[in-house]
Amino acid sequence: MPNPENLIRPKPGEVRNPKGKPPGTKNRSTILKKWIEIATKLKNPITGKDEFGTVEDKVTLALIERALKGDVQAIKEINDTLYGKLTEKSEVNTTGDIIIKLIKGGSSK
Image (cartoon, rainbow, N blue to C red; front, side, top):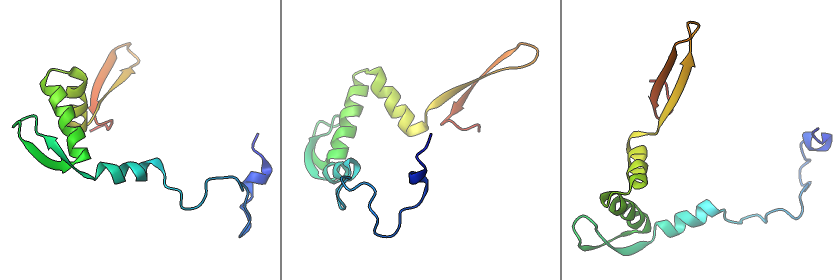
């Protein structure tokens, strides 16, 4: 059962969690974005040449390199990113027929 005290909005200046996260604390997503955008030297797995790019580019190229070596999970991740994940929807109608539909990207298009 919810605490009735929590259902009432705090008054201006009222602090209900004084030991909570300090204001201005960066969350994990903000920190990750900072580091993933840093320029770095990388080796292009397709051309084999040294290039410059971001850490994000380096991670993406590592995924492509795994896919080129036949890693099925890496191939699936790339396909899901490019074309959307397939979801399976099963229906049973009144006659007992089972209908299975593969839906791209979780929509019913």
